[in-house]
Length: 432
Image: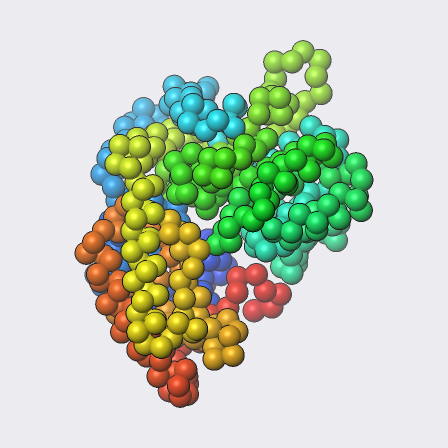
């Protein structure tokens, strides 16, 4: 049955899914190829088999699947018409909410996904500065599927040669590497875009140094909060690190899985996309028919209410610390502390699997994921939700112990005796 679904998916959808992170090459072969529904922290395949999930809709579901309060808020907006001919009251309420919530956001444009708003941020920075180059950290893998970014990666097929040549790379936590770019391209860099953090903590006041360097050189300082927003802090990683960007982008966990993204920032920059300044040259910033869809914005408004009311972000930190400590203790008990480790921030931890030479091992990571699926846990990475509670913690740690016992046998012997799946592959690679 699972193979039948997989074949149909690939027959009808290039890649078998609408996001490459959901592809077959990202999961062990015993993972379900298709899911029917989610409830709380669990997902179910068409046969009703239940899995505890740590993918959580590619990190977009931060409260839990099928939350009734959010679904009801969404439904109420659908019954108001969902998408009207002029701006809606719901659209205004959502704009008021995010501008009141996040100090750096004085104006906002809503859209449906992160690529739209990061690309809009790039366009806005170029229009504001009259410059063309964009600098991004080499260590941060994804900002947009649009030419300016994806054309600068190894997956540049279909992009004209010049598509990504104005995207420059520096190294995160290495301010000298950014200095070098500004020296090499004097007066030509429109913006620096970066995630405030991923699993690596900014060192030596790095974020403030980047902002200062941007302003010294007339560049726009942009923080992408797709992953960190509504997880590190209710107001984003920018508040957690006490750094205020010129522009910022949000998505994923804004609305518990509903499609909402946002570009926000300083009025002086954002107003260039407006229509009120008589005689000013126009900028077609971003224009999306469904960007202000009332159902999704209603979900955003309700999600923020729940995040505030139930202190959800604090739960991420507390649950994540227990999970991180528990997983690392199991690895240590089994003598695998050099092969398996959970690192990074407790609110969004990351697990790493290495071979006996200390190299990151995709075969061992695949084996771990395979064994977790066998134990009823889908763990492509670690995305936490409010639905992950004590029962889920205990279930997870039991599955981790069972899975690491197999990893122990594999690192001490022959992995091929245990690995029954094709090895998972990086999303960003030149060839299939």
